[in-house]
Amino acid sequence: MMKRDPFDPKDLILESYRIEGITEGECRSIFLDWALSLPDSEDTQGAVAKLLGLYAAENPDHPMTKVLSEAQQAAARPKRRGGWRSRPRDLQ
Image (cartoon, rainbow, N blue to C red; front, side, top):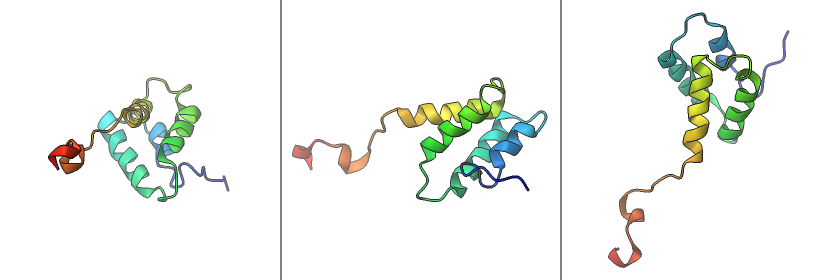
């Protein structure tokens, strides 16, 4: 039996690369399921980087490569905090 990838314990990402004609929307759905299945202690961005390293070079035009790349880029952008935390202290 083949050893499972610790960054893809349910083989969701691996299987997405094997599906002929898979769409970007289907890849986004698979990615969400993958992300929700990771343990809380897992570094999601590290796992995304490892998966890109495994699959992107051989599959540069695959929709899952695009989804993984977008996830990596989105995490690199600073997040804006909303609500009362985003207001200047003198207005609180």
